[in-house]
Image (tube, rainbow, N blue to C red; front, side, top):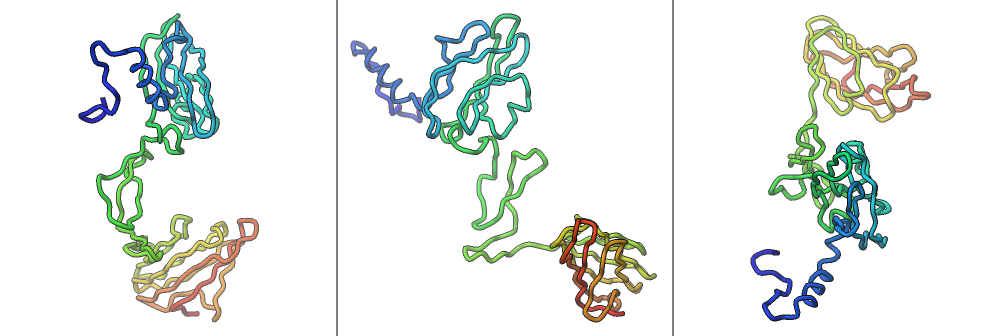
Length: 272
């Protein structure tokens, strides 16, 4: 029962057990939504109990299972309608609520797992299987831990109660060759270009509007920005180079008609 002392009335010897049991069932009925209905579950027919799902009233119902395989019984998060599928993609789909994983033989159910969520999980919009740390730092942004899409971890990036951002760091892309082409993934990064010989930074024509990065010339070789075919480089003084070692400048894509005519603006410590 719940916790150490049950909140439900207990069935005592000599009591009106039928009335007490029915009253307890009535109190627990919201949590029984989509529960297995033994009255209508038979052979390859899976019965479920209805109830209130958000604003929808779900009636008791049944679904037909496929023999000799694993069946995934799910409910739509939008409508609450129950379906049975043999596709794992339906089980993992964010638009579905997981109910039961049912294994079948040629003519009947051989086993099942109950995967129903809590009342809030079933009626809400989350899948209910995302986990996070036991504690967090106030105002810290969460980030995914790994590539599974199910586990969150804390970060050092903070957003204050007045929307001030702190704790973030630029991602440094260190390049030591004499040629490099800017990439979409360089957005927001510091591209550190270091070589004793001259360095050419090619600006492709397909980077999106709003793309920007910071350039640093940390080597003796002067950095020249070269617009690729279709791209354009703008600078108030007509400059296309960084001024020298330890010079810093910013690149920004202000327009890109058709996606193949990126127009870059270069500003900062530049030279002709």
